[in-house]
Image 1 (cartoon, rainbow, N blue to C red):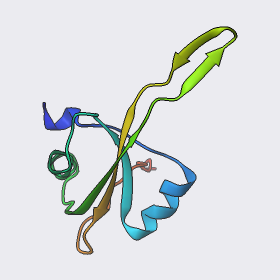
Image 2: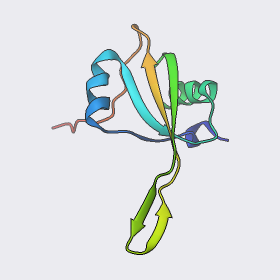
Image 3: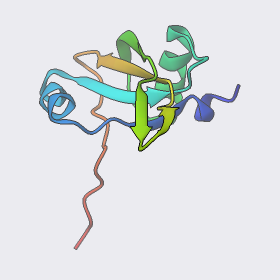
Image 4: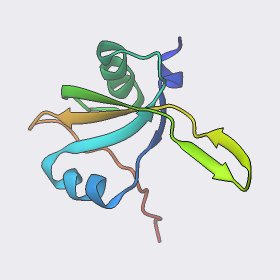
Length: 98
């Protein structure tokens, strides 16, 4: 598995935006990735970032109905990345230069 294939996208929720001030970032990652691989992928993808801690959460699929048809949402793995105090911040939203 390539390091750049581990991180899929950032999770943008109200809770994850409040955790940015504490140096915590939430990403959706590949379901097969383990904590050490996630740490290596974040440090490789973002320059000057040092990861202090990685917590993972596996979100189980939920049953959804559309009329009489039943299906399931996809299984997702989220990683909560805590950066060190001397680390550079991750730019999730790039500001446009005027």
